[in-house]
Length: 306
Image (cartoon, rainbow, N blue to C red; front, side):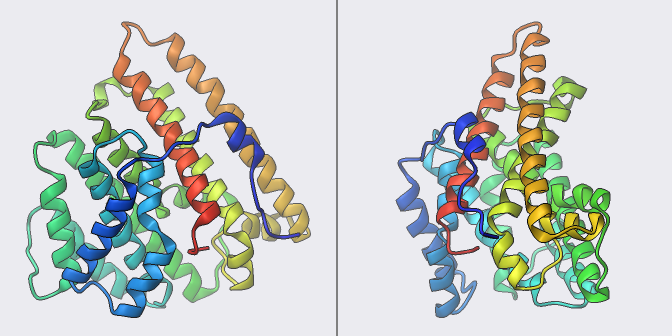
């Protein structure tokens, strides 16, 4: 069977919960999309079925309505842009559009003649209120890195170029917008970890948990992406690079995920031991990232997006 229906180690190592505001967040994000004319009625219904807001609600189970709503609105904007990129074979078109979005986030431009760009402006205006400059710079850089990796994917698709495993891992960590979601999770907890407190151990931990989310995504979406002849999936990359059967590659991807979960647990223990003087904010941040892993998993099991 090529379809991965569940991942026991995720269920074993990460706790599940959901935000009590998620239903209202879902309704309000959909209404926001309608008010801003972000898509036609058929596309709105498609995104409603995908329940993208529930990804935010499951990843941030203890946050305020406003925090989950901001994450939900971002995820809708990202998915619209991601789907747009899937239908392009010219990375220059995506480059032009993504640069305009970065200009908006840096507050260097305002586009009121484009409903999608205006929605980014509206989102950023709400998101950035009262936020530290360092955090704002970090999330903008995370979004920029995401856009750069998506451009790389568009180029590969156009040229029918299958990347190496190393190339794929480096870009996959950004293309799925996971680092952006981590930034939003950090904002939701209102416990900011400045660069001066981000040790090498903590950065390694964040990278590890990023891989866990992405390998989980690749496994759960593999069947659909394989049937659609897509190339940017861990299983497909492994199958091509190791010249093995797709079943063997699938087993190898599952093994990589399990190894990464063990790596994360080891890194977490090391971070906790080295947390001197004691920083409760760092402990809470890591716990919230763990919520994000399980939240992504639970949403992925139920969404109609895959």
